[in-house]
Length: 260
Image 1 (tube, helix red, strand yellow):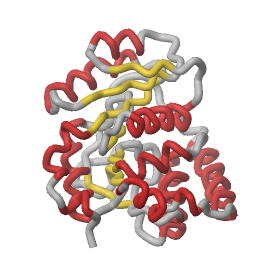
Image 2 (cartoon, rainbow, N blue to C red):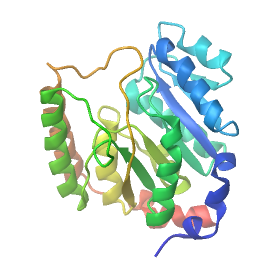
Image 3 (tube, helix red, strand yellow):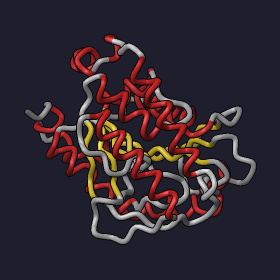
Image 4 (spheres, rainbow, N blue to C red):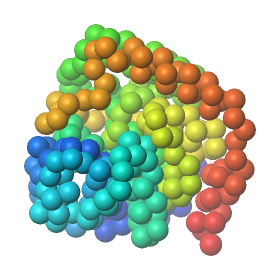
């Protein structure tokens, strides 16, 4: 059964209820065109760039293109940056948060596909999967092997098929925003957060979307680090699995508070 937010028609006005969160570390080369693209497709969308103590002109580019900028005092990494963004979105009363990576890999034009999947499935978090679409996926051999291993393990942990465990293209509803504001993995947030969500009773779904090549900067996961990344994520997932769930952060508890 779909939850009220997926049935009451409020998702029809999602641009007025949503904020785009863009974590950025030294992304001045790709950030400007990405912000222009968001504004072109969805001029009503609020946008916040979480500047993770960049050493380049990331913050200046974001402000020049009209985005709100959350300047972090030190480099927290992707997990800390995103938790900052989620807490900001939740505190400002946004009903949905859309995460786009600052490197330009996630086309803003694909955002409606995430909302369509959330509306159809009633999921709390929708992940844009590059492996469900019809487009060509370009990735190194070892990176593909690592993603395959994580996909298999995470699918088992979540008791559902997860095809793109490292995707940062995400749509998060208000209940999941509260959850992520309270707890969010620091080191490997994309796969770890999915495992935590499903353990606490939140719904997760994937939507087929097109990805594109990084528009600037360099990936933190190279050929030499892909296998190490996969191995350490596997260890992190095992540790997470051994921890007790927090009943105060369960979906039923937070959804009840949200309805008050």
